[in-house]
Image 1: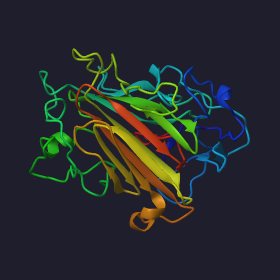
Image 2: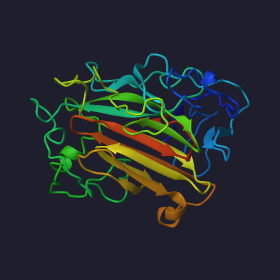
Image 3: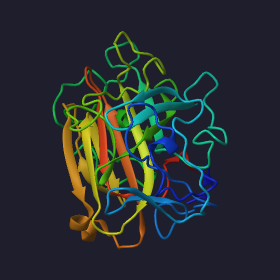
Image 4: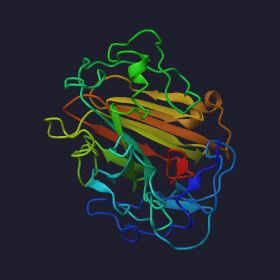
Length: 344
């Protein structure tokens, strides 16, 4: 794996910082998920990584390990981001276009992720597609029936860090074949437009949470939605929101024992830990939930306490009229996301 360029240049201890220090938008609650580190991290997928690890302490507060002792708070939203939206827990924001623009896309500049030396959440990418019911649209979006469709992908992540279609030469109830599926999480001119995405996590009891979804008990905004591309990409296509998009997040975490990762949302969700599929919510469906207990699965996943492992999350919003996305976790992230080989 080639060396990564790291946006987070100055590590920080944030255990004692509260919401005001993070500059959260009104409506967000709790301490923010931060990260970053000093120096370079050349192997986010294994071994020991430097930088700040945000975890959940036994008292339920966010804690940080590693890095220097400077007191620079992460900034949310990042400067220049659009569609900054408070949700049930946390917020989301749309970053720069990096592929599919009139100029062919460009890599984000040196401070696209954060200007303070810290990040206020996880960063990934979101790809917009034209609905299959429109001219030149993608057949896997809006057109297929609304049914659960497990087993779209294989049990292991591909060598390129992408899900592998499990039915070469065939189809599934909601997908039209490997060639079209492979476009979901790859930049394809005239097929999709790719933007950087920021997800702002907050403390929620003994977990950190991002929740743009339904039925969120104890949230300031119980019901919210996940529409980061409204008014961007190919546009809303006659809808109230911009549907037909995918989300892709790559990060890593230190396995300390006792961690849990839960996803709740729609439509398709594929979550991999150490390249193994641990959550499969494939298909076009209403909000669904699945959790993975890392201790229970440690032997199968090849996890050893104290080591660092990759976490890869893939989502697809493929049908009107809802879009829900929620993560609750106790994972201790070692970075704030990897976008096109760049660590945030």
